[in-house]
Amino acid sequence: MSIGNSPNSPEEDRPSAGPDRPSVGRALQQARVGAGLTVEEVSTATRVRIPLVHAIEQDDFSNCGGDVYARGHIRALARAVSLDPQSLIERYDADHGGRPTPTVAAPLFEAERIRSEPRRPNWTAAMVAAIVAVVGFAGFTFFSSGSKHQGGPIASDTAKADKPGPASRTIHPQAPQPPRPAPSDSAIAGLPKDKVTIKVTAKDGQSWISAKDANGKLLQDGLLKQGESKTFTDKERIDLVVGNAGAVQLYVNGKEVKKVGDEGSVERLSYTPGDPQAG
Image (cartoon, rainbow, N blue to C red; front, side, top):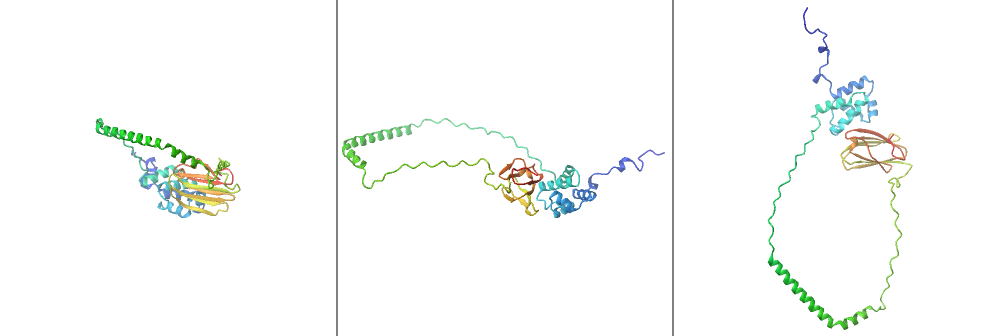
């Protein structure tokens, strides 16, 4: 009897890690086929375009718009085919260099202040200022005494000037203006109540936006750069898909939605006329 590993030992049956493990795109494709789903069905469930689904399954992430959007698409596709998104994202980071490590801020040192020597009093400037003050006071006294001798004629001319002439005009006090109405506290006051109005702004970074009306008509599908805004209006409903939701500022029917999503996440929202309650 030989002592050793049998042909069916657990160590040989265990799947090897590393190169033998399927890539991110291959894993998504195998899970989709195993679930009996087509690319069109996955695209409809995730709002990821069909050409982009094909590209991701071939491990081509060049059209995703960057690592942030690639992770968001991987997370959405993994959930649609019942896979663990975190393990796929970790595999993507390992294959593409990983997430950038945050740089530790260097300690700040306060520069040593150089004390300046105390200034000595400038006696020359003080003497010049005193002379100027004396000359100015003398001139003021001289002109004041001269004006007292000519007080009679000046007073007479002033009295004549005070008399109203034929061309004088009567100035009426301005009538008080009625107070302007204070602006309404509700931001929805100026918007039509029978429509849904959505304004999306890429406030803290760029975002991928897709918007459709109630009839399924595509209103927007593309990248929204930082600082840009888009406004959509429909009578019944607007379906919205937001990539990198944490960087987006969203107003629905004039009211701000405080929490759209997290950084890098893909959110699917639907709004109707009235208060902004996500569908």
